[in-house]
Image (tube, rainbow, N blue to C red; front, side, top):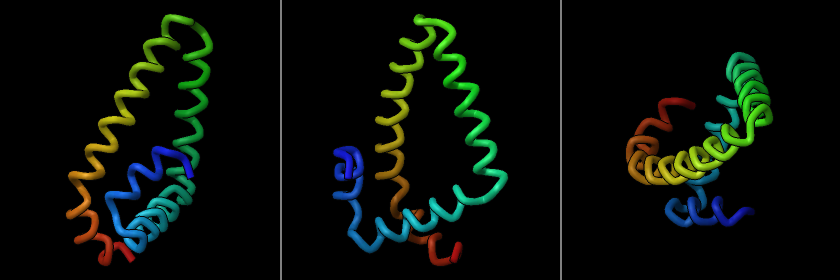
Length: 88
């Protein structure tokens, strides 16, 4: 488990973390979501490889997104917990 996963999971009880992973896995497994993510990822990687300047800008942006995502996850946890039984 990466240090980021450990940091995120310490905020959530083990059972809830597992349930969140299940929901994310199901959504990520949808063909439309999966193919869209693959397309976006490919375009993003290609763009980063075309210019060292763009790569450095993207790297900084990635760090910012990771930080914001962790904060949003923490803030959204009560809502996710409340809505999750409805998504099963």
